[in-house]
Image (cartoon, rainbow, N blue to C red; front, side, top):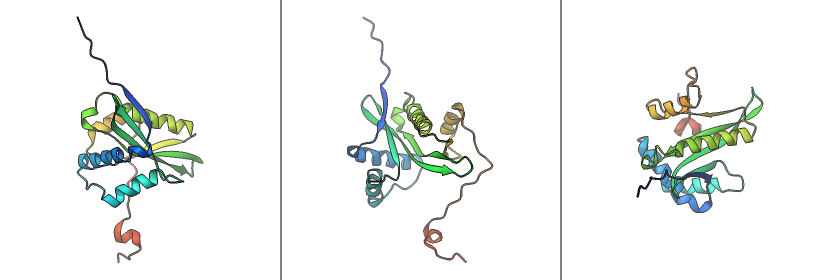
Length: 166
């Protein structure tokens, strides 16, 4: 008897309140992957509260591989003054290493693209770390453009709190 292995089943769904622990676990895994500090317990609590508040600050789609939460896409809406249309900003997209290669990342990305289309967005944007060559290749294969003429700037810490740096 020949038994043909079946492909894993990948589904993407909206995050539910009971997914909070799995969600912050995925954020920890992303921090580990990017060699960043994990969010502290207060930040993790804020993430769950902000996701499910009366006016959520962001939305999350989870990818399940054979019923196991394996990845997430974290996005929110912004607006373009030049297009006069909303934009979907993809803050994070991440799949656990052990679940890569089965289509979970593609399914998450495609779900975000479909969401942007459904909301009448003029574009979808995100950032990628320069060393993350697998992610860069993934996005280029999907027709994304690398906007090399733009620089990312950031205010945080004292600069954001109003302390005069001079």
